[in-house]
Amino acid sequence: MPVVFISHGSPTLAFDDVPARDFLVRLSSKLPQPKAILCISAHWETAIPSVTGNPAPSTIHDFYGFPQALYELRYDAPGDPELAGRVVALLEGQGCNALINSERGLDHGAWSPLILAYPQSGIPVLQLSLIHHRSPADHVALGRLLAPLREEGILILASGGAVHNLRALDWRNRGGKEEWAEAFDRWLTDHVESGDLASLTRYRDLAPNATVAHPSEDHILPLFVALGAAAGRAEQAKGERIHHSFTLGSLSMSAFAWGL
Image (tube, rainbow, N blue to C red; front, top):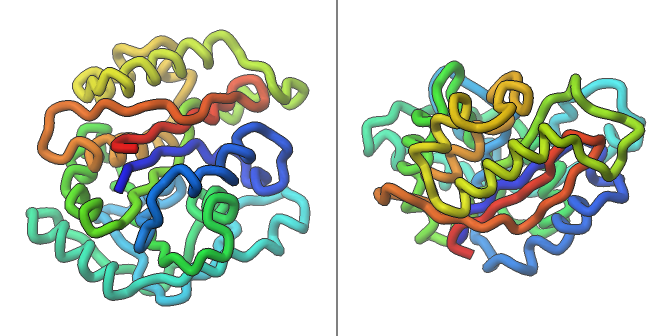
């Protein structure tokens, strides 16, 4: 299976008339049919990598102040406790402590893109947490441990944001882009396409406007899990950008794929 990173943007993505929504609606037609989806979202961090083991995960509306219609959306994908156990066993078998969380549902970093890409598909969906206070390199290492799942037909889908600074949004600029945000997005794309893992893990030192593009790292860390899963044991993982657009001036909606 390929590995995919998408920028999920605003929780209102399911309703917004933007190019990123159209891209996600078409995404599944570009991918092989997965047996299950393992989603790494920017919105779940734990001290130890954790996997959802709920057989019927709820739809978590982890945001405030949006239209009521958004809180009425439900994404009723099944979970897969057996697969959750296999993921934990895979991680622990390679020396990484991991846990199953049997209570947690799917946060909007997972369900808001999946409700467009795989609506009512019946495909099991699990989430894997980010590791709290750990580096990009640590998340590449975590992703490498997940690489064998690709051979089982499991789609590893990382969901975050190529550029994510909510304080810098321009609510009057629906389709334009800020020069600083475009410069960071271009650097990121160039290095994903060249497979330069070493530079990517040092993006905070090397990329233009890195700390403005990501004041905190939560929305870019899923990208590093995807990079690791794509690389496996290799030193490089050349990807391709499969979508490029901006909303609200600085919110990059770039998406990347490896092995497509």
